[in-house]
Image 1 (cartoon, rainbow, N blue to C red):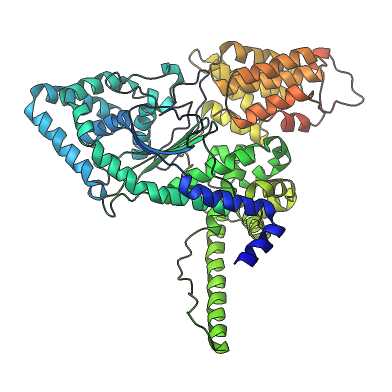
Image 2 (image 1 turned 135 degrees about the horizontal axis):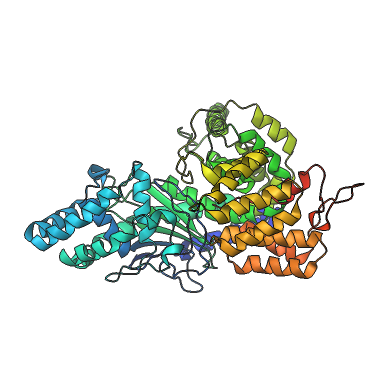
Length: 604
C-alpha cells in the first residue's frame, strides 16, 4: 500500500491531496443537530412532495434560518419551532398522511393536543376556527397543500410572535395563500400551551436528529469523495436539512432559497429515524453541481439547440426553455446512475486463494458482476433518457471517463460542456421515444397547464411571435392583467422583430411597473445590450450595474450583468439596408442574433 500511495501521488498529486483533505475532514465534518426556533432564508423555490419550484428572490434578503457563524459548517441538520407549529395545526385538522409509519413522537403529541382540546372549551373554539381556515384553503393536490404551509413556516419568526420575516409581497406565492392562518394559529397555540409541548418533546426531537446525523454525514462524504470535491466550511452557501416528525415520512419537501438549499423531511417509525436519503442526496447534488454548471452559464448559448429535442418530452416548462437547468438535472441523473444500488451482491475475494483455478473462478464472478451491474445502470440511464433527460447518457459516458482518469468533476466540467457535439446530441434526442409521463423527481415542479403570459413565453420560444404579442396585448387590455409582464413579453418580441426602439419603450414600462426582481434585472440587461449596440456605453454600464443592484441572486443573471460590465455587447447588423429610423435600426435580417442574444431564462 505505501508503494501504491507514492505511485498514485506522483501521477495525480492534486487528487491525492484532495483525498487526504477529505479523509481529514471525516472526523472534523460538522453537521450540527440543532433544535431551532427561527425560520427562513432568501427567496424561494417552494415545492411540493419531493419538489422544488423557484420563485423570485426578494430585493431585501430576509433573516436566514439559524444564521450560521462565519467559519462554521455549511451543512446543518436542524429542527424549527415555527415548522412544528404549522405541522401540529395540520395534524389537528385532519392531516393523517402516513400516520402508521410515523415516528412515535407524532402520535404522542397528537394525543396530548387532543387531551388539551377535550379539556378546554376555549381550545375547542380556537381549534374549530383554525380547522375551518385549513379546510377552506385545501388544495386538490395534497403535496401542494402541504408545501404552502412549509413555505410559510420558513419565513416566520419564532413563537410567540410567529410573524413573517419579510413583507407579504416578498413571501413565496404559495405561502401568501395561507398567511392569514397566523392569527388563528397563535390563538390556538396559546390555548393548548403548544410551546410547553414543544419543550417537553425536544429531547425526542434531538434523539431523532442524532439518528439521522450519521447517515447524512456518510451521504455527504461519499458524494464528495465520488465527485472528488472537498467538503468546505460555510462560505455563504448552505445545505440545510430540517427534521419534522409531525410530517408524513413518505414526503420529502425541498426548496432552494438563493444560496440556501433546504430539505424538510420526517423520520419514520420503523426503522426508527429512517429518512429518504436518496431525496436528500439529490438536493445535495444540486448544491454541489449547480455552481459548477452556472459558472459556465455564459457558454451555454451554443447548447440552446438541444432544447428543440425535448419539446415533446414529459418535462416541465423550465426544462424545455432553459438549457442550464436541463443540463444540471441530466448531469445529476448521470451521477446517480453511476452510484446507484445495482441490486446485486458483489463477489467477495475468498481468503487464502492458492489454486489458480480458484482465482480464475473469482475473477469470472467479478467480471460477471461488473457486466450485470453496468447493464442495470444502463437501464436506469435509458429510463432517464425516455423521461426527457436527454443528456444523461452523454454525461454518464463522460463521468465514466472521469473515473478512469481520476479527475474531479470541477476539473472535468469544462471538457464536458465545451467538448459536446451539440448537433449529434440534438439528433440523438430527436430519435428518443419519450414516455407519456415523466419521473418523480426532487426538483419536479407541480404539473400545470400553461395559460396567459406563461403560454406567451412558450410561444416566444417556439417562434410564434404573433401569438405571443396577441396574448400580451390582451393582458394589457385587461385592467386586472399583469401589465408589467405583458410589456416584458412585448419588449422581447420587438427585439426579435428587429424593432429596438419599441423594445426600449416596453422595457422602460417594465421598470416602471414590475416588482419581480428577475424580470427587472433582465430588463436592465436587455437595455444595457441595446445601448451597447447604439454605442452609448455610459448608459449601457448604468443598466448592467442596475441589474446587479436588483439582487435577483440567480447565477445566470449575475454572469450576464458582469459580462456586460467587462465588455460591450455586440450583435450582427444588417448589410446593404438603410433603417427607416435610427432608433429602429435593424440588428440582424434573420432575427437569429436577437433570439440567441436576447433569450435569458424566463422569470420563474
